[in-house]
Length: 461
Image (tube, rainbow, N blue to C red; front, side, top):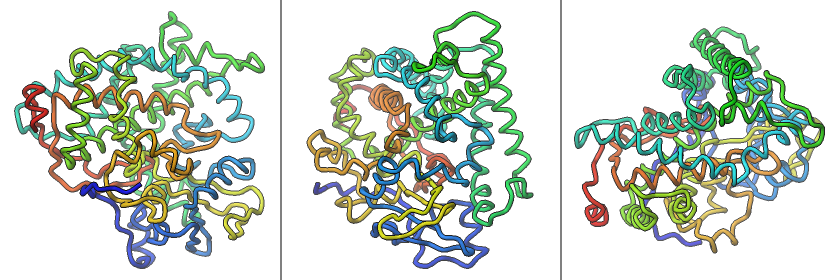
């Protein structure tokens, strides 16, 4: 649909040509997005060759549907993705394939039904209030890291919903371990492209392993403690109690640890990043900001917002959806065929790296009008009917679509509606999106905090 929005937020500008070998590797370590070729923002498929190995980029929605829905049995999660995630997440739903993945998905799916997600909305709203108290204590114009504030708040929600406020859970330490782990992934990508073994010496390797070991040890201790202690109404207990509807089997403790770590890491990261980018984009667009403020006020925010009010935040969800288009939390899906395949006329052998570059698909010149512009009206109810289902993939697609999508979108809408009427964040540094498994802003979106005095002031802002 046409877009009149004058707002064009930050994006990665691909190089006109690939840099020399060593510069290429340094760039991959710093930010893999910077070596993606410009062709993937305009072509349906594109083959890139590096060190004698083909990488096939697939941007056409019909071809993406072919890979994810029509022929998923012909593909596995790529070796690169396994190197990135399996050390910490083991063989949970994100990293497993085939029967193992299907069994875990069947067991976990009932825990994320809309009725189950709705039970957690009061904890989400309470966490937003606690964050508001922290921010309200800061002076006008105080420097803050927007991304840090959002991650602290979503980790607070994780502690309440996944762990029922477990007093043995060190939130800052776990958050730091996840950050250390993700910040090392550029080297993992570079080693995989060079076909060097995962244990090849590299900067940060010791910290990477220490972070992995800490994450798995702490999570295993939580599960073991729950086995010994009393039942509590949280996701740990739900995973312990869950059974496969077909076989009656429960998850093993190792499977529970694998999936808990997945939910802890992805459950806070995705929402925190969606909120960070949403606040940034709204700071550039006063018209969209006023619409969100008006909708939030009508729903009772900030003080009287209810779970029912959250469910009615339609325009707020449009803003979040557009933020996830411009800055998808997962910038790419990676697959490799287990047999010879043909994708858009390109033949790929087993083991070929196949990239579905979501960041590029979401900014593709043939798929979107004004692809780099911020326009929440793209996600108005009627507009969605004209959009190909597989040109918008912030949570993946097909049978493996993110199981926590409903939780993340509900959480993001609730938190944005609670905080925006109270605060405004003036971003003080042009953000650079960096791919570290997730799409994080380099330096965490430094900003100055502005307090909104009244709802009348907010409407006039």
